[in-house]
Amino acid sequence: MIPVDGKDKYVTAYSHKKLAKEWGVTLLMLDEYALEHGWDREHRLHWSDVAMQALKEGVEERNLVAVKEMLRVTGKTRPVGRPSKLELQKHLAIEARIANEFDEDIARLDVDSFKH
Image (cartoon, rainbow, N blue to C red; front, side, top):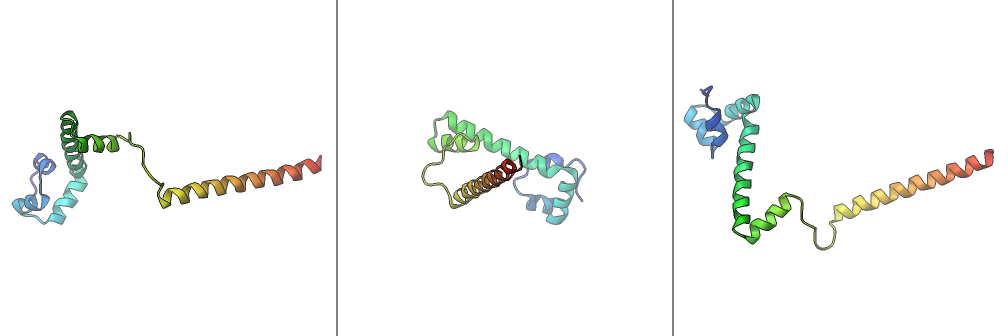
C-alpha cells in the first residue's frame, strides 16, 4: 500500500512506475492517490524547480543554448521571421471584427443624424 509518509519519495521520484512497483500498487492507483492528495502538483513544481536551477547554472556558465532557453522561458525573445498562419488568421479576424463594428457605428450614426 501507499505509505502515508510517502509524499517526499513520490515528489522526488524519477519514475512513478518503479515507485508503484516498490509500494505494491498499480500506477493508476498511485496516480489517483497523488492527484487526490496534491502530490502530483508538488511533483511538477519540484522538477520544474530542478530544471530551472540547471538552466540558471547553464546561463551562469555562458552556455548559449541555456541562455536562449532562459530567454524563451522568461518571455524575453522576439520571434524572428514570418508570423505563423495562426497568428495571421487571428490578426485578420480582429481586423474584420473592428471593421464590422466601425461599419455598424457609421450606419447607426447616419440613421441617428436623420432623426434629429
